[in-house]
Length: 423
Image (cartoon, rainbow, N blue to C red; front, top):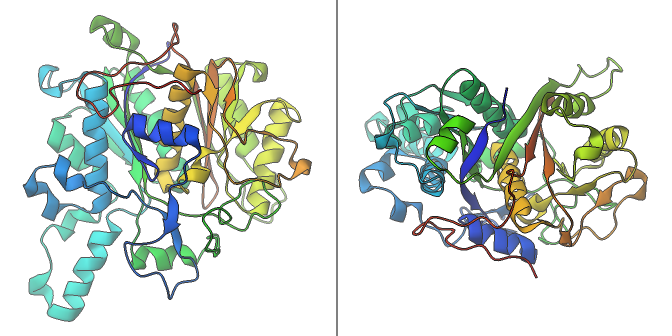
């Protein structure tokens, strides 16, 4: 079956709100990681995060939605609107059940939930918002986006930690192949509140360094954990016939998807990431030599970094494909990282430049990676995006440039109204 087209993207990241702001900052190597300001982190061992600063989602949304929603849901609603505008889509003009939505989430509306629990403990049940009944829920972003934009086709939510956003795009492709012409898919995720922060600290995977330039260093000899962030991307996934019929601009094609689970610890069996990469290649009908760049999961801890590097060397050969991790500028955005990397790959196709992995100055040579640490201009047609989730989830997505690749213009009035090519 033909690959679905990717015809719209809505991007929100700690180093840029809006597709062009994010892309310009990424090519500059601009770091969006800093000390947490959402709450006072002084008493916590980890104090850095990738926060979306200087952006007020309430300015983009109706006032009635603000008391109903968690911050991450507001960000998802904004990204959804931007993705639809980027695709030049008016859902009201579509047949009633023509468009579905599938998002991924790792924690639901944790910040909203913490506030209401505090009200319960300190003031009593009469002070708990009725909206708590759904604002905390994993599926809330799918539901709110569906309601706001009238997306009455198939809807679902995926929960698979850092792999979930790529799984959401895979689910969108299944929906397309089952007859739904258009699906809004991906994830905008993150939960920066004390309740969620405490839960994340129990995993022992967060970096405790205070220098944003040293805290998150995947594939580096100094790697000591990762930094969390908020953000991600929602993308319009569309049947090619539908896209052609309405004259849609195509950012790229969703050619392959695969997911695997790691074996139970202690079995001695290898991790499942290499198998996911090979299955995604097979699903896309690509050879390893066809891949021009890999967007790495980039866990930032020696053990997982070694596993990912070994998987890539096994499939592509030592130093066999350029590897990059632009999430070093944003932190790991939970389920949002994978879709943001997919959007970044599409922008890379348009400008024919691989964005950098920043701050890595001591790459581990034993990993045998061709790690891109400065913007690199090379011919780009095909990319793979890797995502891994705590608990053994592995997901890989294969995307390719549109048949006539080139600079991608934006409809007037969207947050990405211009495309600036890298110098």
